[in-house]
Image (cartoon, helix red, strand yellow):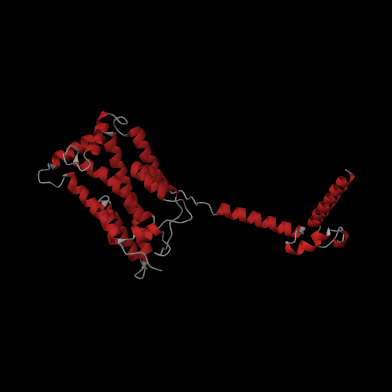
Length: 316
């Protein structure tokens, strides 16, 4: 029993000596290093392990580096810069949809319209008003056009546009308005090498851009509005009645109108990313502002044509 107690005491003494060595400063202000005797095995094998001696200076330095790393991680979070224009449009859109739009939420007439889209997505029977058919399908194409315009000028320090673009397939500007209203300041320059894989390989592809234009054109043909038998006066009159009585039709029309205006506001900066400004900023800005304004007259297809005809991002 005494032998066991003595062995335990020796082990405790050795452990205490090791801990004391760890906390003694290098300068030896409290005791000389030779005053601490380590067991022979520890002295022999100490060269195989890193030094455990700490000092007040090294501890302060490590603490400062830790705080700097934490501050750097905090600063590297998404940058949010509120944009009053896009946020105001978002509030107006939600306010109109909830409080000011005609009709009731998902009443029988709106339910019948939605059911008609599900049963006859190409409007082969002509049961859906051609103008409403165009608006509804244009809202499905608009997220592609907005991706072509928003992603190249997107700032990597800001929030990601991907979830809001996906959400806009169902919620329209109700989802995309959050991104446009809170995104980081757009970049002034962007090369194809700096762009993401989706932007550089897909959204900048001529094939993809012209596919989007073709989708816009197919909507016009499948709606039946270009058919010789179509009575434009009756089509417009019926559409006006839907705007007055249907929440689905009125909110969808407002949604497409806001998205069309927002696409036009993104075009000038997108064009500046792609040009060298060799002919002067004023001349280029005047021309592109006119082009951007003209796309409002042709919802969706106007912005899609711009994306198909615009210059490519510089390689470097």
